[in-house]
Amino acid sequence: MNEYIQEAKERLIDVSGIVTFFALWEILPRIGVVDALFIPPLSVVLQTLWQLTAGGALFLHIAASLQRTLIGLALAVGTGLPLGFLLGGVYPALARQLRPLLRMLGQINGFSLFPIFILFFGIGEGAKVSIIFWSSVWPILFTTIAGIKQIDPLFIKSARSMGASRATIFWKVILPGAAPVIFTGVRTGATHAFLMLMAAEVIGASAGLGWLIHNSAMNSVIPRLFAGVISIALLGAAITYALHYLEELLIDWKPASENEN
Amino acid sequence: MEGTLKKIGLKTKEGGEAGKALSWLRNIVVDNLSIIIFLSIWEAAPRIGLVPQTFISPPSIVLSTIWDLVTTGVLFIHIKASLLRAVFGFILAAVIGIPLGFFLGGWFRLFERVMTPLLRLLAEVNPFSLFPVFILIFGIGEISKVSMIFWVCLWPILLNTITGVKNVDALLIKSARSMGVTAVDMFFKVVLPAASPGIFHGVKTSCNTAFFMLIAAEMIGASSGLGWLVFNAQNNYQIPKLFATTVTISALGLSLNYLFVELERRIIIWKESEPDY
Image (tube, rainbow over all chains, first blue to last red; front, side):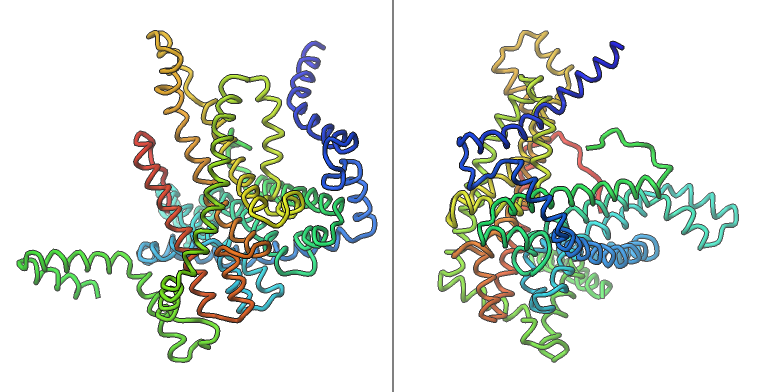
């Protein structure tokens, strides 16, 4: 019994900060310490959030943002993974030669290229998907190459000595060996890409969570603005969790890392 | 191609100074061959009509446009505007974040346990989604942009400082104490150096994100700065200027990155380097 009380106490301490924050968010605007026009109380924001959800508007915007993210990510994985495998495994010399160029390009932030993407694809889905693609393809490519390089050559040699075909070696040795590292890259890319997408949607879109925020700000519909901020935070967290879940599902041989954030 | 270059190097080996210069040049070319080929394709493609020149400006035109912008002083004005905002916001974040991180990580342990989940939550919030909130509170002026940079920089710096301080090896502190070190010395000679790698990591992370958040912010809510310059060029369909500004922004970002890597290398000389591609 004491154990439970102890654990409950610990949990309480851990969440007390967040709870206090939300309590302050509710109380301060209501008593006038913070101007309620600028920062509406939490309950009003939640109410607006509920209205948006019930009316279906929120789903529309979430769908728009999510669609762009997923398409861009899929393209990045579809390009980065095979390219990474080719460079890392089949043509390592070419990988070495390309390294300066790729590193330089990889450090160019996708957002600096946004105007150029708009130039090529117009202010439409293409430009936004390109930003997501650019932001996520570099981490994926680099981690794939690094992931292949760090596979213990002993595994490959053992497999070969047991007469495994090249296909078997790829699917059963190389892919599983590199998968944990590659997943880290996918996660990094996805987080980065989502950040960029929000900025891109604020600038040039007519739907999506970023647009929702921008529009709310322009029309001074403040509760909707904050509702949008919360939605973005939730969506971002959801994407991260989904990727974690996917990783656990696919990679069941990886020892649990102690450093989970 | 490498063989030919190597032969040139060999031939001029006896050439003394000229030989050294040539083999230095040869090394640079060989090491960065991919970049050189990329630049050559970029230069050639629009000129021979592979890609419409209205869409892609070759590097030569981009460079001459940059030169124009430099000589007319336009570029300098906007770089100054952007950098001022970025530096100001960053310094504010560092001045608040690092000491706060030390306090939370080192002294007020219980308070830190309470605050850290909240801080992590706030840090997760997409900084760009808060930009309209900042505009709302501070208006479309310098303060809104500086405050956004402040927000973006604060979290990595604060959280990494807390972690850095918390992870100082207790053994170091105990040994120092057993040698009778004063509190001041303890801070400057033990805690500060031990926490530095973590702090520096936070500083580096915040800088990179901050610079580009600034550019994005300038695109929608500013009338000066590099972000505004790009947006303006795009709206007026001045493609060479668009490319020129984008190249400038990328170059600035790259050099900032490089600056921090170098700084870290010189200041934190005891940290092991991480493996990477």
